[in-house]
Image (cartoon, rainbow, N blue to C red; front, side, top):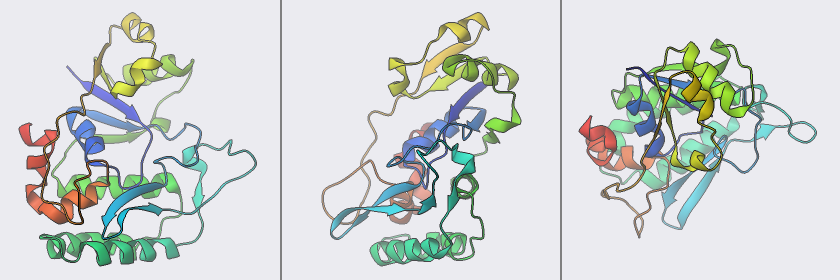
Length: 231
């Protein structure tokens, strides 16, 4: 039974995002959706000696932000080196800094992409490669998008050959499962609960930070602290 998940791209997402990718056979980046400010599309958090810190990709928007995520462009390229400087200064003492920095540093310092969606996908696929996640990742524009909110998702899932649609638990409040049922597609809710703690720098443990925190602290052992570890 083929499982499909459809989510907007995030910038260096937290570990749960990658567990969702692992849980399905095809993961579709839903970047035909409207871009939203102060969201995970262009920012995420890391741990620092001063507490949790936001890393934000500066983007150009127009009017009242009625642009899709795939239409959003970044404001230059200087942000990438600045983000790397922040990451390096806060994780250089982490147990697996050298091993992770070997491949992550050039991802930042040699980045030439300007589209937010492209940038997010690039980081996501690089991290998937490191974690040995082999799920197929597609873009929503690879499919015909029509219908209302829930119908669109059901239609994309059907076109992808999915028999099961995996959704985050927050969608219980707004997802209409009837369009899926009509197409014979089961809806499954992903569980983000009960993550174990791992060795983490800088004070009290925080789960809801970018996965780079886990990678620098645990390296190739990162899978043991994710749901992926049992897959």
